Amino acid sequence: MKNLESLIEEKLKKAGVSYRLIPLPENLAIDIASHVAFHKIKMEQAMAAILYQTEKGIIAAVKRADTQIDVEKLKKLSGVKSLKFASERDLAALGVETGLVPYLGLEIPYFVDVRVLEIGQAYGTGGSKTLGMAMDPHDMVKVNHGKTGDFTYFEKSKEMLASGRRRLLSGITPSGDGTLHIGNYLGAVRQFVKLAKTHQCFLMVADMHALTTVQDRETLKKNTETLILNELALLGDLQNITFFRQSDVPMHTELTWILNNVTPLGLLKRAHAYKDKLAKDTSLDEINLGLFNYPILMASDILLYKPDLVPVGKDQKQHIEMTRDIAERFNKTFKKSVFPLPEPYIPEEVAVVLGTDGKRKMSKSLGNIISIFEDEMVIKKQVMSTYTDPMRIHPTDPGHIEGNMVFVYLDFFGEKKRVEELKKLYKEGKVADVEVKNYLFESLMKHFAPARESYKELMNDPGLVKKILRDGAEKAREVASETMMEVREAVGLTNRYSFFGYSQK
Ligand code: ADP
Ligand code: TRP
Image (cartoon, rainbow, N blue to C red):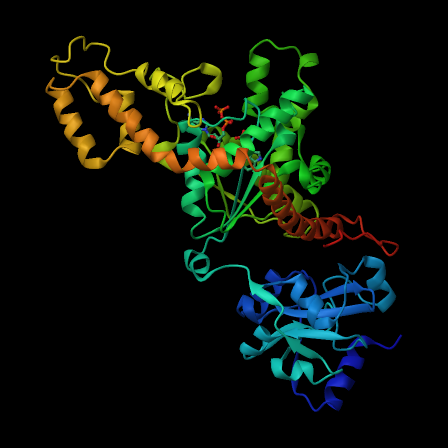
């Protein structure tokens, strides 16, 4: 086969196109970020050429690095029915390598996204590790009769770009009975609702994690179903949120195996969850490996999606630190920055919401919770048994606000003015505990009314829930498979006989 570089040059010259060849340093990684840094260009100027296998043969799609391909639109434009990422073997047959696709030199149909035409100078590789190329994007279609068309979308909205923090990810394990209490809401779900306004969110129901402790088929099913409904009802609008179930995306367990190999035993032995178990005099024979490996599965959950932020409760901080550690080890071991290091996001004021006993973290297992979706009577009872000021016996005794859980919750759910009023009256001994508690109950009911309504609707429409999960899994798999292809490449699981590809819809 003729040297592709000279082939490209020949073609470009023939088309009367001007271009600039830029020698690249020997050890420059082939990923986009490294090229953007080296050329000192904007992300939008970096070209990504993606090869697809179709029923009509291989085609290439050229897009800006800051956009995503809309598969359906590309199918329409190219007039094909099936689009799959080209496998390693497909590429080898064309004589090219992943990451280095000299589409201009190949005799294949290619499509250039219209957004590419807006950027002034487009930068790509000249199909070799040592040569970069810059050219006027309008010239890209002059060679080989390339076609332009509209087949991408922006991954980030303007707000996301402005905030500089683009993607976030989190998960909740259906290890309890799957119901969420106001501690979960304040510590986790609420952050999501807020952050989803400006970020692209991935939120999973971590049922694989639950398997480490829930080992009964009916229980796991029930917990997972309950958690799904609880979360969906609380989230409301799913705009910007990809909601999915961990076990619907098999790449999580696949990556776990690979990360197992860069995770030191010592790191896992320092994990709180494992240490706590040991401290309780549990013998080694009673601790399953799933529990021990829990942090690695969680690292996989996170790293597959390359999030910038991971919103979690304080109790999960160590897991995020371990994830960073594992990501760094992977990047170092395989000499490629596949995984950006995620940051934990733990808003201070809700770091730990105390339970109705006023002593310990609100937690189902401690029975000190206030529920969200239970019958009104149950919630009322929980509110009425909430810890206030033990020294106060009569409503006329001056009461304390500090450490008084009713006021702690009211600060979150009550109307500010009314809460301030009640605090003043309480300190002066002018209002009874039961009155304040009634106000808390009312406030909770008002706050969660839309969610409680939505819960009932979802409960009665399993088809809708299924559709939400299916759409979520599809989107999640798309992102996860891109990362896994990079991972396979980085560790050397691909070779010249490889054909494997994660199929896209
Ligand atoms: P628990 O810790 O009660 O078993 P989960 O593990 O199901 O609850 O927690 C789900 C999410 O809710 C996690 O992000 C966790 O940090 C958060 N969370 C749970 N309880 C609280 C609490 N009392 N205060 C703040 N956040 C909490
Ligand atoms: N382990 C987390 C918890 O118990 C749940 C979880 C699973 C998670 N995978 C995750 C949280 C990924 C954040 C990111 O709360």
